[in-house]
Length: 459
Image (tube, rainbow, N blue to C red; front, side, top):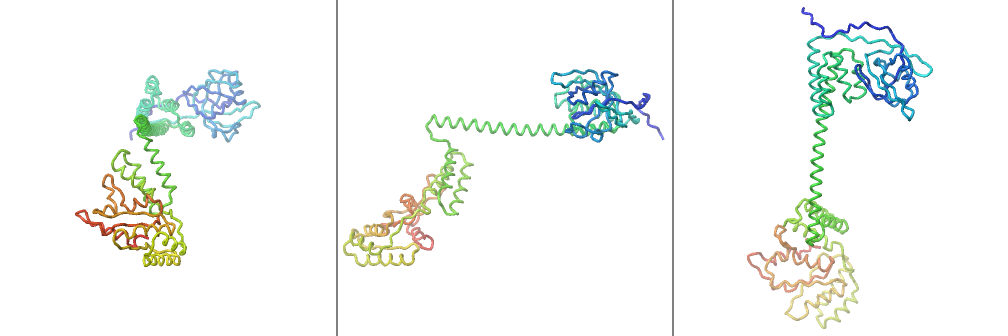
């Protein structure tokens, strides 16, 4: 069996246990070969630094397990720390001190000594195990490459520092020095400090560096997407503001966005059937996705405006006084006993049944005998509004049903137009000159009129 040679072996003679003042650290882990500035405000910590400066400047540095503890006890302090040397101590005006300390080597707390003014500990050095050449070299190269990659991404690490890291040949020193320049979690740094094997420490450090690189790249991609979205939003806002300014200068009216908001408010205020309200909201969603100046947007906008303007539940108050109705009919027309009798019969039935579906009265006679004026008298007698629609000469069924919405300038039929004009849904509707309708290649309007007058479809 071939024995793999060792790349590093610490031949420094072990020192016996030492009694040193303890400086508990809150949010930092000091590694060997690391120089760190510390701002200290706790009384016991200041006393420990002062005692070290007055003697041989040696101190033991150990990190607290929880950052928020102001007065740590033995169980609150990690047992593995570093032997340190106080390089500089400066008192600040607010009573705190700034200390510059250097980590020397790992140590383990064996016993806490409760002095009067500060903590003292009995510590002994930690012996690092020997490592294998091949694994140590491979891990060292991988860590150096990852460190260089991270430095190239962040731009916060100087080329001089990268060169100094790459020049370190001792795997243990390489792991400690490199780890000191990363903002890992306190738990991860303490885990590195407590890992005595240099090769294992390099392996853990390599995983942490790779994770930092992945996090940095992910953060960069997220920021890039957010930036693109913000630029797109800002561009859209800028163009909309320009459009608003141009429209204002040209006197083109209010902003399309304001018009859509107003339409939405009108739909909410308007009392419509459940189906009609759902259709109006659906068309409004389509309109919001369209270009305001497009022909299709104009058609959809007109459709919504027509739905809003129709009298869905607006009704005239109907009078069912038969004596008053007979009096009005006699005031307006002399004679015509049979038509008047038929009208009064209809009114009597309506007063009893309360609801008669789409009742139709057909008046037939030569011109000038009073058919249209009799319809007006019916409206006056019942208290309803009156609409007169002349169908003489109508040839296109679209005049009755309305045009397809795919046509530019499409309009509803004359029935719907008249309802919008009168403003109620229960007027007396006089369809005049029905016999004078004609037909051509566009269809037969009389066939479309059958659908309008069917009481099963319109009530």
